[in-house]
Amino acid sequence: MRIKILRNEYVVVGLDFQTQMSNAKFRDENTFSVAFARAFVREICQSAGAEVSAELKAAVGKLADAAQKNKEELELVELFLHLSDHSKQDF
Image (cartoon, rainbow, N blue to C red; front, side, top):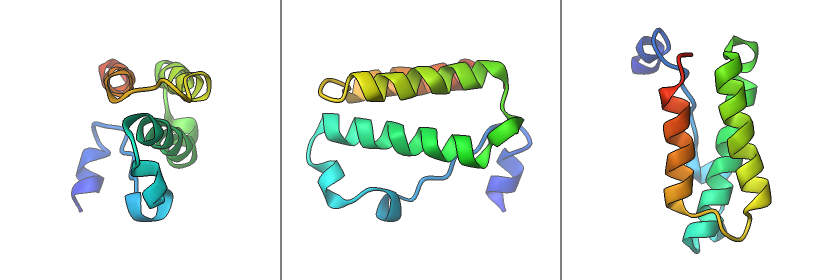
């Protein structure tokens, strides 16, 4: 019920850590950050689809690029900065 309320004002992205990430994805900060970024991008593209703004698509694209290019160096701080960029967009 709360998710429906949030959808009036936000793009809601649901992630299930049990089904979308194995235990191996939690072994270190970098591995988790990359796995989280990929799951987030995949989920927002599938669930939000055409409803998202061009600004959100650009922010998601930057996160996807960061996860791809920085497989060895994407840390939580960088992940949080990218997620912060998503929340600053006027969706």
